[in-house]
Amino acid sequence: MVREWDAEQFHARVLELEEQGYVARRDSYRITAEMNPETGWISHVHSIELAKPEAK
Image 1: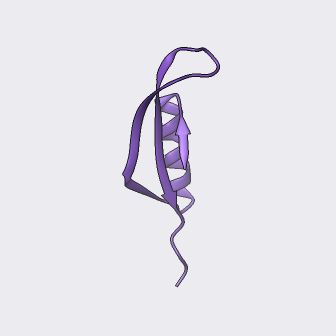
Image 2: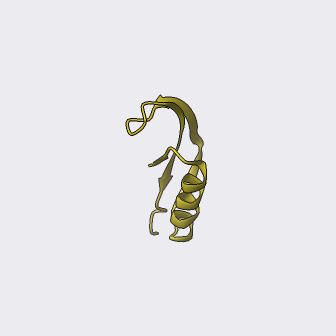
Image 3: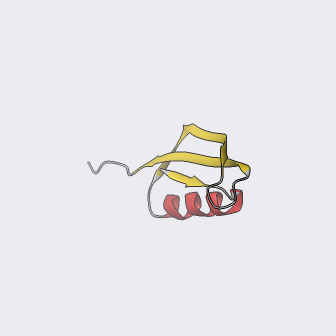
C-alpha cells in the first residue's frame, strides 16, 4: 500500500515499486480528503495497493 500527501511523491513511489516488479491494483486507487497531522490542513491523500506477482 502506498499512501502519500504529495502527488509527485506518490507517483514516484508507485513507479519505483513497479520497477521492482510490483503490480499496481488500479481498481484500488483512491484520492481522499483527510486532515494532514503535520499541518492540520485538510488535504488529499493518494493511495493504491500493489502486489508482488506470485512465482510460478
